[in-house]
Image (cartoon, rainbow, N blue to C red; front, side, top):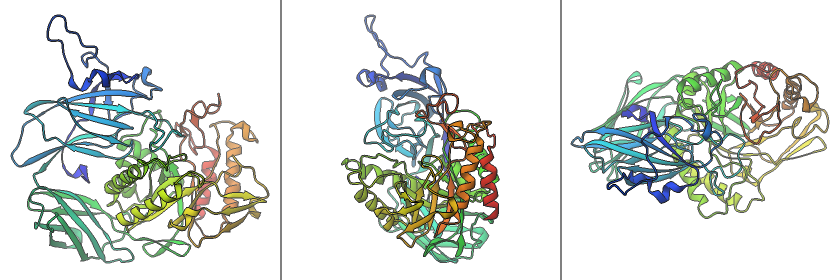
Length: 564
């Protein structure tokens, strides 16, 4: 269900019992049954009694030394007390678990979920009076046919990484809704409300926006869906005016309130328009890494620090790389006037030809959109990053996914990110078959770092065969904070700043340029980065060190954003 924070919720966050199971023996032992010895000759080779505890939400890798580099199974256990109530339903909601999760209630399998960055829930039909036991089998082993797959350029944090909640609802409750401005309109609000339960059909639904003096009534159809369409004159949300309104949705048996903003985002030729006005994206990429201390960012405080740094840099947008981030990030960005680029973890070498892949990608897309569809700050759905046209079935899979994305949401832009454009004789040849189907041409280029300049930045030429907006979605280079030097192998702030100065010169030569998005805000853990003394398991392309120290390139980009 959407908008968990607006529900009747009991948090299950806190200390959970945990058993490490790197060999996967727990499946054979059937740990979820929690067996105990009965007779004198009985023994059981596992127990949650006396086990270490892990904090939820949190990754397991940074909580105990023996888990640091674990890619495998950890069994979590929590208990809760419940008293059954007439005409009430109870759900167990997970903000995210990385990567595979099997959930058990009182020894019975509730269900499974695949995907480390989107929410899921189960209804607790067998909840019992008094104490109940939840056991979660978590496995973060990289999968050849996973999303992402075996290729990672970030740390594969495992565990129950986001909030866990018990959500109590009426027997017929408001499951989901969409309340947004109609595309290209400044006064028509449209959408729908979906009820779930035995009495969902032919029920009155009311949508109220007190600040706009709106009180709109409609009825659900036989399947519990009610369509909305009414006129209003909201102050439209923008980075300069991040106005949000209390929207109250009620049915006979349920009421949900959420802060929602209204805006228009569209493409016109080679321009991106926000509320009908030309927009230049001043962006930065962010990984979900905890500030000041290595680990998975998972609190509102973490999100506020990261987004405050982006604001100080002069950004009007953050790209949440390369997966949907914690809901705190999206909601706080909206409140702070920062646009959001939401992305699926369809990253590099995905097994597009695997028969399970279309279903996995669509499920993650639906889960991402369902969670964030009422966040007006989200302006772009990004469906992939750095995939390759020679990968079998790539085009077919992503073209179909773009079509599904448009069916699910017509109010936002979509894109796929490409990094295999040609660069020869100081000319970029921007071409990929997927660009024909996306709203925005998004490209990653690392001229000055992975690829040397072939001429002067001011002389670069561009060949772009699509009349669409262009966003440079990644650029930059690595530097260890405090290092000096004038060559790439010095890993110096000087060389990184030089890359940024030359990139800024080149940006002025890019036709159709609608924005840039630096890679990236903060240094983050990535185990493939193995240069001792310089990287030490960190990607050092951050404009800030992992401790928030500003590198010289920060000031170069801030100056460019001030000009724009």
